[in-house]
Image 1 (cartoon, helix red, strand yellow):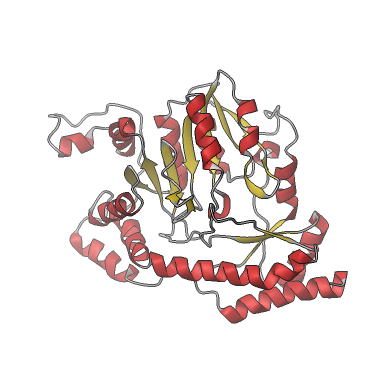
Image 2: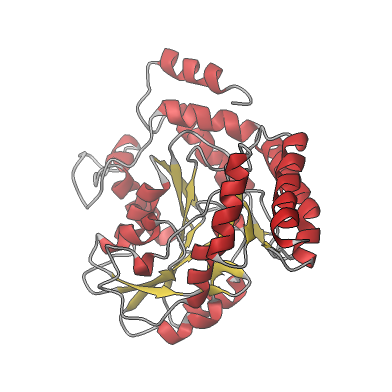
Length: 371
C-alpha cells in the first residue's frame, strides 16, 4: 500500500454501500476514460471476467476461430474456448514474446471472428500492422492489456486500439486491488450491451436512469462487478499511479544498465525496447541461451535468496489443448517457454537489492562460464 487504501475502504464501508457500481467504481472508471481517452470503462472482478465479457460481446459461437498468441496466460484463450471457439495459436516474434504480426494474416480463414493481441510485459505489439489487418478483413480486434497499464504505442495508450480491451489489477500488476480488472469498450455500438452483460444480463442500468419501465432479464451476462472495497483500494492506487510508474520504470532501467555487459558478451538477451513501444516497468526479463542454463541460474539465484521465475508454458502444448492443436511448430514461443527468466520487480524494491541481484547474476556467469 502506498496511499489512502485503508482510508477509502473505511469510507466505502461507512457509506453503507459496498456492493458494486458505487462511488469508487465510478471514480475509477472516469479516471481511465478521461486520462487515456478510452471509450466506456467497466471495472470487473478480474481481467478474466473482462475477457469473458469480450467473448460475449463478440458473439462467439461454436467453431468460430479466434487468433491469438500461444505465449500468454490461459485466461486469454479460456474465455473464447468456453463459447465453443477454435483457437488459432500464432508464434511470438524472434526478438519479443508478443504475437508476430507477420504470421497473423496467413492464419485468417472465413471462420475467423476475432484477433486477440497480448501486450507482453506491457510492451506494445505492432499495432499499425495489426490494426491494418483487422480492418482489411473486417475482423474484431481485442487487446489483452492485462500487463499494459499506462503503456503506449507511438504515444497512443494501449487499450485504445481494439474494439475491446481488458486490463488486470491483480496484486502482481503495476497498480493493484488484490483481484480486479477492467473492460474497455471503444466501439460505441457495444456500450449498451456491455452494461447489460455486466449487470447479469439485465437492463438495470437503463432502469436506474429511467429509460425503461421494467427491470428485466434481457441478455446473457453474469456477476462481473467488483465490490466497492476493491474499487476503493484501486482508486487509492490510481492517485499514486504516476509515482508508482516512475519507480517501476526506474527499476527496469537500472536492471538494463547493470546487465547490459552480459548481453554484450553474448550470455543473455535483455528485452528489446524502442521509442515506439516504451516499457511501463511491469516485467524485467532476460533470455538465457538454453533451458539448462536458465535452470542453473534460477537455482543459483535462489541459493542467494533471490526468486527469479520462468513464465508461460505455450498454450498450444498444454494438457487441455494439445490434442486440439493442428498448427505448425511455434519455435519462438518454445524458446521463451524454455529460456525466459523474470527478475524481481516490485514497487518496494531497493537500489541496493537490484545491484545485489545483478551482481549475483554476473557472479554466476563469472564462476561457471568465464565472462
